[in-house]
Image (cartoon, rainbow, N blue to C red):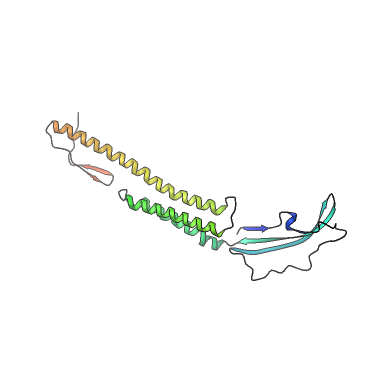
Length: 208
């Protein structure tokens, strides 16, 4: 479990007597602090409450103030179910395209693009549930890495498809050149069949 400590960041968040020094008025907590059971923070559990009183020394004198520190613990199970499990599942689903045949271009592109759009939608929904911040937190990094993995699978397919297209074009050009040469010699044309990644020829010729 990760913890979050909420504490005053400035004197404006404290209860402090700025008009009267400590020899005139002194703040102290009266009894213990009671936390209402009806007040709950989603995905967090109240862990510890610390209170106290201190003296603040300034050029104008010593002033009394009281403070309170509230410590929360993040619940891991809801985070796993709500954030990490769906994103991990979408990344794994995008990897299924590696087992789809290279000739099934629409199926592979649809699977990768759909997974990427689902991750973007899930990321946007998570951001709406959090208060606006001006920095990147851990969940943002996780979602960005998941989208990069899905985009990498789409990029890998594009590169492999481009290399395969160049290879097929090269083989086709070689067959066309061989057919032209054999036609001049009045020999049978070369026929070929593309079976998966292999080219099967029904005749073999040695061009000198």
